[in-house]
Structures are given as structure tokens and as C-alpha cells.
Length: 268
Ligand code: DGL
Image 1 (cartoon, rainbow, N blue to C red):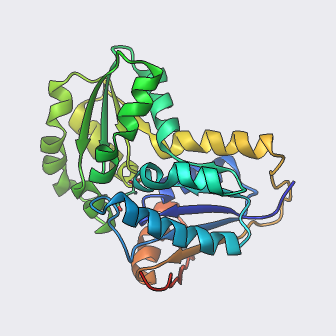
Image 2: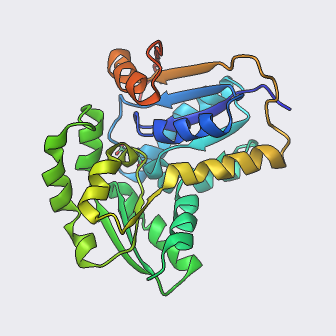
């Protein structure tokens, strides 16, 4: 049993999709969520730069004595997960392997699409994870960075964005994928639009939600669960503007009283 918090990080509000699923499955856990909105988007940045930002956040979270780290960002997972897992003394969960495994379980025609940031697609981390499971998978990867911008601009409920999403995702209809991995934690906020664009027969995989199963398993394995039923504490930090983060987080988590704190990670 451990009352130490679980740490979550993302470049912005996207990781809240993973965070929300974690709260549902782990209602007793104390948490700390860091959104690096001062450096958003991570997608177009070189992997070394993303890694540098991630280590700055991790050092903040370690000072807060977290017991487990969730890298709730595919771009950061692609850039930094192996180094984090090698160097940290606590369990570290990324989102790519769980996303690939969930897609592999779901597909029946072996045609799998992946949408993600430029950084994640360029890293080929999903392609590698899927091919390791089954070299015969036919994979269609596509970078859709504009989707991150739509979410951070608060347009995830704006019906006028449907045509651009439909047009962007046409390659998956052409490729006849039966499974599409939402390989960016921002994208599940656009789920209805994405589903509408690719058709109801395509299974959408939320990589961040798939990762929560790994979090649950690791907490069990290392006896790190919090069995204390007092009201858990949830701290939110952003390196950007707190008002911007709060608006989206309050809506998405249905927590009207949520307030984040500004975090200064020091010089870049
Ligand atoms: N949410 C992040 C991910 O899962 C990336 C968004 C960004 O480009 O900053 O990849």
C-alpha cells in the first residue's frame, strides 16, 4: 500500500484522456498531472528536445515523490520511454506498446491505421511495435498534427471541423483498415468526428486508455495501490496559461472547481 501520487505528463490537455480513464479504474489514487503547454506542440520538435523537456518534468515529479510515472503522450513515449525505464527506480508506463497490443487484439483483417504526431510517426515506434507482434500486419501510418491544434484551441465539440477530419482520414478508407490507433492522447477528444470520418465498422483504439491496464497491473505487482478511501488529492500543473488549461480540463473531466498551478521548468 502506498499513498504516494501517480505522476502523469503530456504536452497539454491530451493526457487527460488517459488520466480520466485512470481515475475511473483507480479512484483512490492521489495524482499529479503536468501539461507542458509552454512547449506545445511536441510533435514537430526533434526527439532530443522532447526528451530534454520530459526529463525536466520528471525531475519535478520525482521531487513530488511519485510512485509511478505515466508518460501520457505518444510523442514523449517515442522519444524518451526507453531512457526513462532504464534510469528511473519507479515503474514507468508509456502509451505505445499498450496501444499496439490493443490494436493487434482487435483487428481481423490485419490492416491497421495509425494517426499520431509527426514525431511519433517519424520514430516508427508504432510500426515497430505492431510488426514485432505480427510481421504480416499491413500498417498505414499518418501524421495528423492539425488535430492537436484543434483540441488545444478548444474546438473538440465544434461540428464545423468534421469536413477537415473526414478529408484528412480518407487514406484509411482507401486502405480498408478495420482498426485505427489514435496514437496521440489528444485525439480521443475528437473521437466522434474520427469515427464518423472512417465509418462505424472501424474500431478506434485509444492508446492512452489501453495503457491504464498496464498501470493497474503494475500497481498490483509492486503492491503500490492506495487502499485509503479518503478523498484523493489531484494536483494539476501547466507550463502555459492556467486559465487555458483549466477551461479545457474542467470541461473534459467535468470538474468545474479544478484549478491548475503554473509551473516554471527553468531555462530551456
Ligand atoms: N499528446 C501528445 C501525444 O500523445 C502530443 C501532442 C503534441 O504534439 O504536443 O503525442
